[in-house]
Figure (tube, helix red, strand yellow):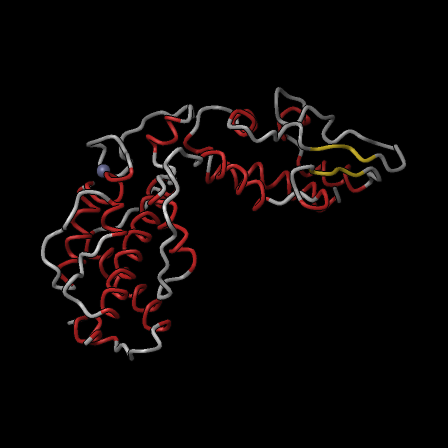
Length: 287
Ligand SMILES: [Zn+2]
């Protein structure tokens, strides 16, 4: 691996990954990665160049020391490493290159593997791809809610809902029955004059037809609104877990109205959707 690559690795392991994955876990990062089935510690192989030096922080990749005794001298390292002619290859990545994104994907795959049977893909062209993918993951039970992580043997401090602390965090709780989620979703149903929530199950809500009295186009737009809502609620949940920030209901509803308009109005070719109508009576947008 190039010098830049090595530094990227160092910084990734020390910064990005701990932030998104490890703040929840007591286990050391690299043990954790190995434990879930991604052979991280053995995924680097030396490619000897001039043989002048092959010690990257005198080795023992993050397991139990050296790494120059736990990262104390990062600044020194940059200098030391610059002199190295040997290189490293990361066998899990394309062309031996280490990429945080690839490692994240591998971890995700392992964490969220599930036995839930394959369900058909649902499409909705009015939302960004990331929302479609999120919905697919939610329907397949592949979101890393705490009970799912716990089932997969990950050592957690608690599986209680990080937002309300009143129940364990499973999918339906996180996205529907948690008080915050329920309040937000009810407000979204009010905004669209859709009556009461039709289900306590997220999958039914994502797949179902709560807008059965709408036109065909209206159904697609309403589904896009529900999907956007659930996606943004999950984002808020992650903000709470990782940054200790959490929406109030009015802020959430406003954010959902703005974002869903931004996503849906731009993608909707057959209707011109006006912001004023969207906000005050969205049914006018789909007549
Ligand atoms: Zn909750």
